[in-house]
Length: 373
Ligand code: GAF
Image 1 (cartoon, rainbow, N blue to C red):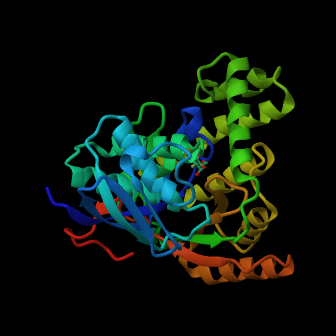
Image 2 (cartoon, rainbow, N blue to C red):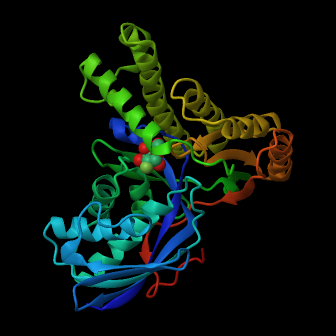
């Protein structure tokens, strides 16, 4: 067992399946080439010392003193993972950790899940704690829920830890079953265009928790364990007696789960082009029924579709962040220009546009040769 090492974990884009992971549903993310990199060394003095190349300040505290609320800000994602591991009885002691990375911050690309995942991998491997990747994802999510205080689902940590290069990860969040499905748009002359709208996240945590409450209340009133269990065949009949807002929340979750399964079928059949309409339908549902979009996201989607994209949708939790779009490779420039022009017309901050590929999940970076981020 070595005392030190370099570990990296990617951010993610969710192809489809939004706000389904806390409803026992399905998600279909890919990992990004952008990663968070943690250089880690065990310490014998019981001290956790965390520094970041992207942030000022150093967090230093005794691992024995870790508790929710003791650390805030970015260092909480690191300390939270160490706290959960110790809570669950694993022999984890002091560590020095230096964080570096190129996952855009605050863009809804899961830089925090990447940080948790890289930390979980580093700390367990260097402590001789043998846990599989699903367990690491569960631990990273628990850190975010209980230590950071963000009530997220399991999608982002799973994508970061379990994804494969040139594959999408189909995850059933109820059973934890996964399937790696080939996803390589370039092989079909396509590109996955990402538009970082730069829209500031508004009310994110409060609104996210409010959507979860709506879903819980709806499931209670429908007397099902989770919205995953609502039958799509009789959706209108099932939601008839719910308050109007809850009916719309249910409709989003139920139809979105079906869109994930349909998207997975298309990818398995190598009919990648046909994913487009599912993406656009997902966005409409998130805008109208789930109400998690903002004008920047809607304007980007409309501009992309009008410029000939096969489909487009917001990705991640919403309230800002990124839009993804499936476009013909030959149309990438025209679609990019169309979004830039629409943003200028609306006097929005200029967006960042780039194309994404499906990259590998978390790994040790100082042993195996890896593709550069
Ligand atoms: C955020 C959360 F962290 C995820 O768990 C998921 O719920 C997503 O929003 C919405 O699909 O990224």
